[in-house]
Image (tube, rainbow, N blue to C red; front, side, top):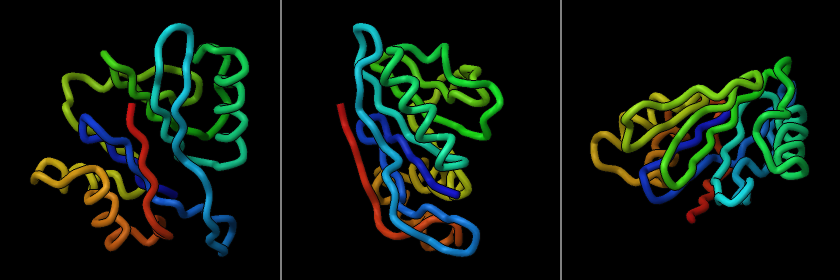
Length: 141
């Protein structure tokens, strides 16, 4: 699975992609323009369908064309809003200064609420969540 964390400045993720019983390194973070706005995206869920969803967003410049039948969650960070795109639907994250998702998300969220950065929170989640690992990536506006 994954851990993705947003601390209000940085979006961070682990690098582990698990396929059957093998772990490999994969990209989970993107910075891209959709319309006139720049967004940070963090991918969790099934990796292949997730990459297809990211590609659809990049090609269409909208979040509306992501297939509703995919087992994918995309954390979307905009300048003025945060939401998770799940099964093609935008689910707002209400009034949160920090947010985390994925199998290690609860660990990361707790770490950030205790004062850690997103990168530090992902590092902590990696120690606790067996489905997260292989280093940390980060992206900022």
